[in-house]
Image (cartoon, rainbow, N blue to C red; front, side, top):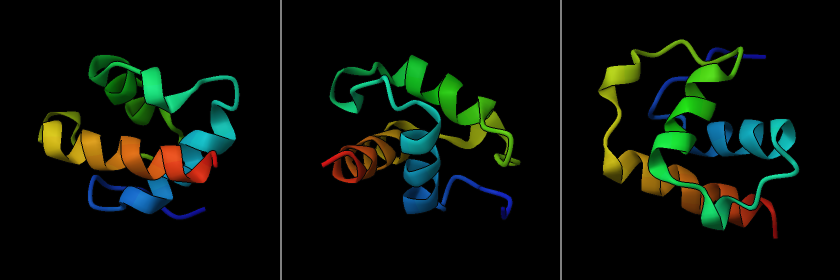
Length: 67
């Protein structure tokens, strides 16, 4: 498993869908999403480097993964 950084949007979405199968990503808040990303074992980036645009892109990719 490779280390994940904020720019790895698709890979983060895949990890989220595998780690949190019980969550519907359509309804997750950005603070909760941010925390779940930072809690991933493979996530190595600086938590303060995210922004709404990045979180939205990850959320959209996660939704795609669950369909």
